[in-house]
Image (cartoon, rainbow, N blue to C red; front, side, top):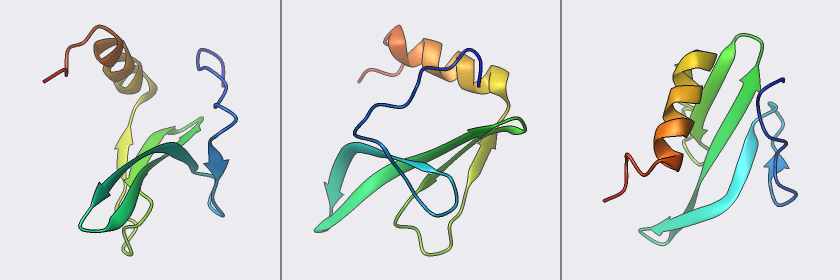
Amino acid sequence: MKGYRKLPLAARMDGEGFAVSSATHITNQRLTCVAVKIDAGGVQVRNNLDPMKNTLTFTHDEWKAFIAGAKEGEFDL
């Protein structure tokens, strides 16, 4: 998709076309990863270990604003 970086080699795709991040966080002895799917309809984000596969959906403009904010440190603690 134009305007997005190619996924890093460490990312892997699941059976539904979500790229699962290689960056992980351990909570309660479980490995948790963010999974993202970008297509013409928007950007979908979910926890790949969520058995219900609850998904947040963003427009491309919302996603670009989020990425820009992250790069600028807007969400740093």
